[in-house]
Image (tube, rainbow, N blue to C red):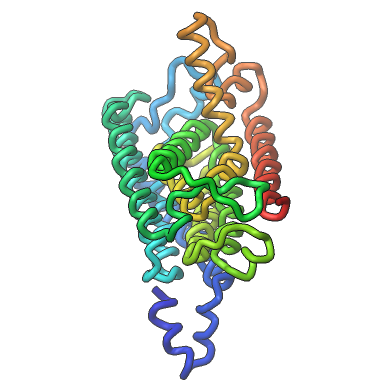
Length: 361
């Protein structure tokens, strides 16, 4: 909004010329989202605690140490959504269709998560929204958003799949690009959701991935950089860096309250929305496969659940002591802070590998 209102005045008031720079507006979005989180966090947590008598339901078959978490309020993802949305609306170019598509996906998946969290609290159970309804809502929202993005992108980017470590080359997958991209969005959303099981575990990898995609969006949206690095230029996607910056700032603010011992959990409201946001950004920037590298920790957590379920149904035995993977290590006796910090380290390493794809071609 500031860009649209103030930058046109830069001819007469030179200081407003600063709004043309993505780097400035991205940094401003980081600080705005962070300050919003700090300002609204305490009040929101008090309100959630007052309305959630028993807090987030704790699984009876989960690690024994989780009993101490009883009574901790959930739905903290509302704070992330508020901070990200407001910061993006203030600092992004609101004539950019990529921004609107991204906000719709983020808020839409956040709404699905909100309903899921609310039903869990109402029923005092870890089971919330009916799985069929939940999946159907995610599919409709993801497919609709992908069609929207397809119309925004120009040929051959609209139906092309970019490969990491390969110079300017696109695999034309035709209309299969729609279900593929929808799978990326839904898969990313639910993978982040599965990772959110320990205090601070999910939010740092989310911030790391968001920071990576801020750089990727900035690069692919700039023809000078894409020519030099020989990656695909996707006009208009540079503006996504502002949203990514807002997500980093909101994540930092949320971590202040989610650090062990957590004062609030993000719940499905936060995990589904942030995961979907990362997924649709990857689709827009044509870095879907790179997302699987940068967000490799999320992939690992999701795969551990798939392997666990498949092994139990097919062979009648479990591969892990408990899934997702972080619970397996808890069952093996690792302290929660040790698991969380080591998973953060893994997330950073994978992010660096993902970023290397920009140059190693």
